[in-house]
Image 1: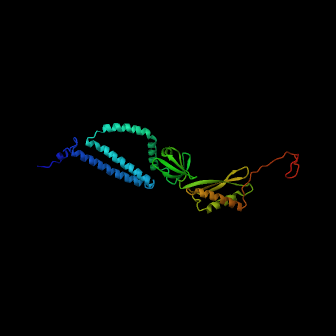
Image 2: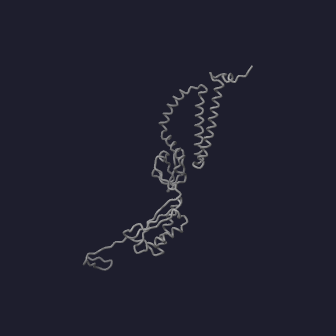
Image 3: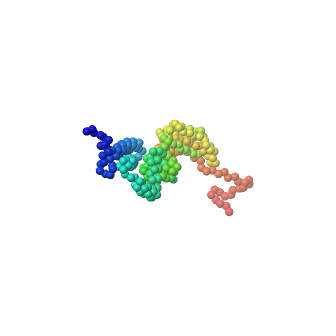
Length: 283
């Protein structure tokens, strides 16, 4: 008696008209889904290795894994003659109810995924978003946490972060800042420029390229206004800015160049005589 594989596969397993062949197809589809889920989740974990904290990364990886498993299970169910129409109708109604109830949650989740893959901001960046300025403490699935320069933690929904203008102060490795340096008209402007450039050149964090620039910008009411443009590493620029300003001021004063005080010239009509001594008023 010859062994017929086709006949064996057509043998019912005792549950309705489900055959062994359908059970094998179901198992194969499910196994393929598990393999795909493992491959995709592993690649997601590697891609987000340096972009997210461990907890958030593992949560997202598991979410991707189980979504693929559920998808494979739904695809394989028809092999067991399972009627999905009733499940789809019930699932559709439930999905509408849940969708309306969790619209903002879903929007924040999708926006969080876009932020993770586009990465306009990273943990530790100094940014301004939604009128909040500070350092990025965490980029979560549903929200972003900002620590302001006053030490206050602010949670911003990812949808608001993603749809707002984001100013990232440290995305570029270098950042420029400027000074207005006022000197008297009787002071030597060329000498003041030379002194300022020498002080800038001696600072370890003042960049040589792009090169700093100091020049006469405006002839003001009370003195000459010099403008200085200086580049520094983006993550050190504030310390460089505050340090250099005081050093330039000290160097100018040591060389006899002073900051001008407000001045007014008063013209008296011809023949007007001022009576009384200094500090006295006449009636």
